[in-house]
Image (tube, rainbow, N blue to C red; front, top):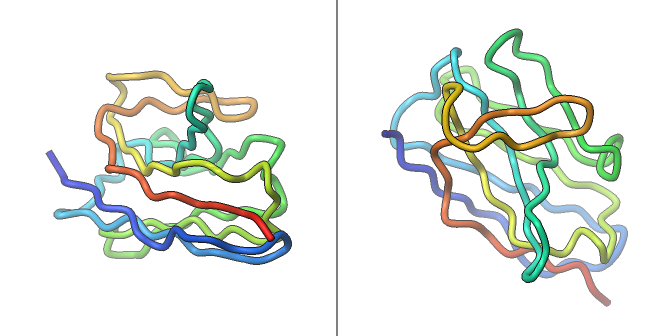
Length: 128
């Protein structure tokens, strides 16, 4: 299984930007869902963005739509989450994840993605 490692988290003021990276030990297959999930301690994890294995479409949860952008490189070894206009409520641990249809179903806005491979997480804190 491909090993995923996130980076790019940190402390940022409201209105600021961060770019999270997720590097894979191998290449992402075109036939997998890839995405980002965040979790605040004591709360349910929230799917925030994914690229679907079925048609490579992107889906976002409403709370980040227009502010966050998911992307991946052409070599399919890295995915990113560009986060702009960050708000205090975006504070969470952010995980990248991939899956080929099994594992855990994560709802992302109007759709869902399936993940069975997770990174270790990176903390994002939005505060003055």
